[in-house]
Length: 111
Image 1: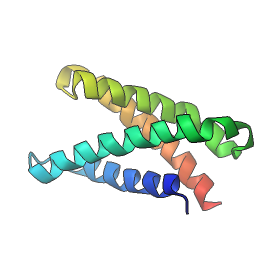
Image 2: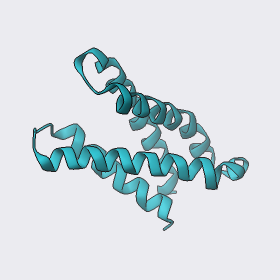
Image 3: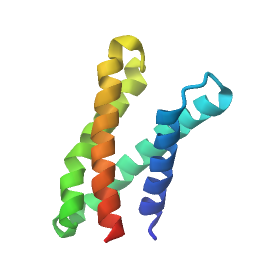
């Protein structure tokens, strides 16, 4: 398994924890920071190392790419503006695009 795939799976598990919990604890906020670091690292990894091979990507990954790009952009906006009530629509945009993209990537990995 590649480092990118492993990082993606860790990010999916971390995302599930963040969606399920919202305790104001140090552990939760450490996971928010981990989420930001992993998401940024994976986005940079894909943009730097894998963008030249897009033509050879499986169809499911090609379908996932724009969704995950939207998730990355909305995640960056959340990092700048904060995941507060006034930006709640952005939180759900991030969650929805990331979840749909992740399902497609997981389906591609399962093949």
